[in-house]
Length: 188
Image 1 (cartoon, rainbow, N blue to C red):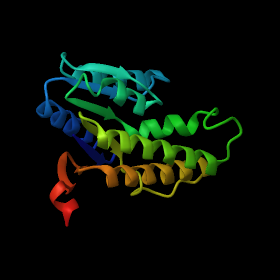
Image 2 (image 1 turned 180 degrees about the vertical axis):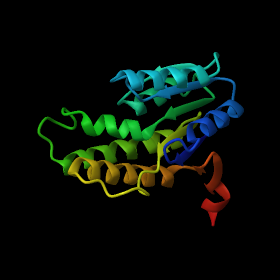
Image 3 (image 1 turned 45 degrees about the vertical axis):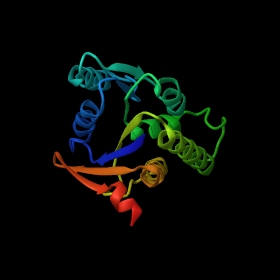
Image 4 (image 1 turned 120 degrees about the vertical axis):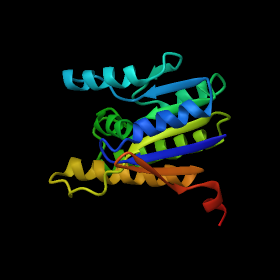
């Protein structure tokens, strides 16, 4: 049906906007949460996100295999809302067993980018509307360590790959969504 990418900085309002898009896109919504409660603060964030969602939405928690979730639920939903891709990238990057134990930073980045390509293709071909949320991390400072720079680089590249596949891309700044790509723009 359509892949929609919603980008923004931390606390920009991107998740709220994506939730509004999902609510107006169909009655059967599957919310795909990629965060895991690794500490008390993150657990509180997850609880707050859950409270915002309509009671009728199905929530699926998946930290790694987003393509599998799309395939499993695309025929059971009008909309799948994946929040957030940046956390998904973090989960893949920090998993020592992916793609294999002892992988180099370059191996990890190649693996993550391939996962993103597959995810984008699956989402773009889905009969459901797929809305993905991601942080725009490239406007900040250059991280002072190798892991931080690797994260920033791969997150930016994942956003680029998915933006190419998306029919619509929005950038949310200070709670204001700006459409930066649509079908009309794509055809030009």
